[in-house]
Amino acid sequence: MNAAMRVSVQAPRLDGGVDEQRVVRAWDVLQGVLDPEVPALSVCDLGIVREVLADGDGIEVVLTPTYSGCPATEVIEQSVIDAVNAAGLGPARVTLQRAPAWTTDWISDDGRRKLREYGIAPPSCVSDGVKPSEGNAAVAQERQIRLVPRQAIECPRCNSKNTERLSTFGSTACKSLYRCIACREPFEYFKPL
Amino acid sequence: MTTPSIQVQQAPTVQYLLRLGDTALILGQRLGEWCGHAPVLEEDIALSNIALDLIGQSRALLSRVGQLEGLGHHEDQLAFLREERDYRNVTMAELPNGPGRPGDFAFTVLRNAMLATWFRLLWERLGDSSDSELAAIAGKAVKEARYHQQHSCDWVVRLGDGTEESARRMRAALDTLWRYSAELFESDDVDAAAAANGLGPRWDALREPWLAEMRELLAEAKLPMPADTAFRSTGKRGVHTEHMGYILADMQYLQRAYPGGVW
Image (cartoon, each protein chain N blue to C red):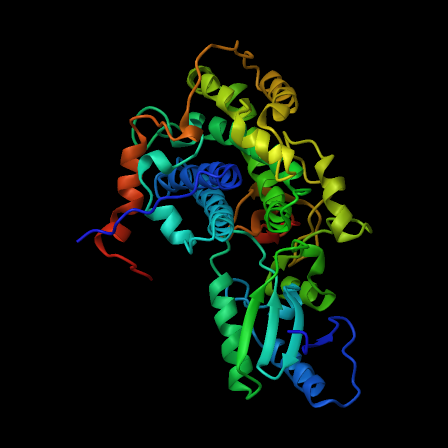
């Protein structure tokens, strides 16, 4: 592990090292690994890939799980390993990193656009300009009973803000069910977490 | 052929985490019983999703128990191969889902509200645990508990301040459940040790903040705040109700009959 070359998530250094090239290629491969429950998004769009490391033993991908009980976690791990191996960059391995906890604020702008195109309203910002680590405190102040969404959720089809929530929990733990009163279409809303 | 049971360490650190992990596991199992039976589809999905979160939290906690114990027990062995007396969930979690089959929705959402509030208060404090892995688990779980609490409290208000029948059922559920809440705030050697080494809070420290939230909730739901009773349940010390054996029979059958069976 000490020999591992740490390349940051935001800005991979490109000084031409063999390991760094492998890391950059691995990131490219991961752009194509889709979330099985929201197949509009790649694991990178979702913001769950925290780090990609290369060392003599292969490629290590550090993932942060979304929900504790997300049934897709194991499938995602296996898909990541298969994709990196299939690209000839392996052997790949996955490590899970719980802290800091994943937040929907890590979904990329590109991911938000893809969600909208797919018919899912993207999550509103949890932290509203606060760092993710501090976002929790802001949400904790929220009243626990009679929850009213803090802002109107925009219909991903007709962009109307005249929408209502039908159910807190939708087809998966990460989504709520909404209805657009303007265009009458139901849609899902990715819950801010 | 059956699989032999495993035994877990009595060390306070291990026991403290088992109490949390088992409470999440057994409540998750109870909520899972609603799958396919809830009054409306949306609530069927909601209860199953909450169950899934709880079982996910339990998996993380039991895995951590296995690591701290150092005896090589993994999450599945801990979940499925212990004897009844070695489960440390609070008794409230193991109670059937209310009278009748598949249960009573009012009872189910009130218990969820009581336990989700308690869990949220715990997770908030466990975010500063001296055990970094537990702190990480808490950082994730607190967000989930918040949703569980909001969802169930919303229902408590709707039913408590609803029709004559829904209010009657809510009051009946409150009468049954309230006496089991004392166990959530009783401190003993296990949580005293956890507080001393920074693992997590003493449970009696959660009582006042929990009561304050319950008072607000019950007032909004137009339900009476119940009086304390002398009754003390003992699930967290391994002494369970007559219902526990049936849950374990359901949960453990497959691993006992087909040792090491996997999907």
